[in-house]
Length: 114
Image (cartoon, rainbow, N blue to C red):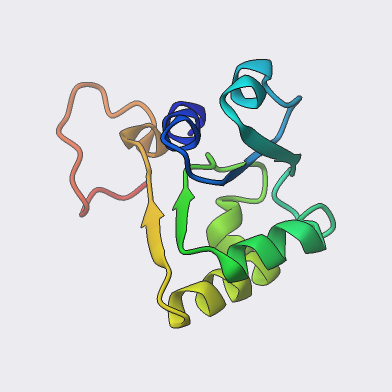
């Protein structure tokens, strides 16, 4: 997600990103404002939730944590995303075949159970 955020910021857009670790200096140099979030409601700050509600575009790239995907399991984030979507925001969800684990060389499709 950092590469996407940096490119959008360098293109002149206002970008707010999240991280589970320490904010990245490269992101800051590109103009990305970063909030630390581990995916639980207690750490999804009011600032982040409000920014999501008011966003024109949300790009969700957070990998699943201990509780699963924060964009799918966190009620406060889900509500903020629903509000953004109903206001006309473009919601983009990026994922990876990595969520399917080691499939031992077999093809992975949308029908493959995680």
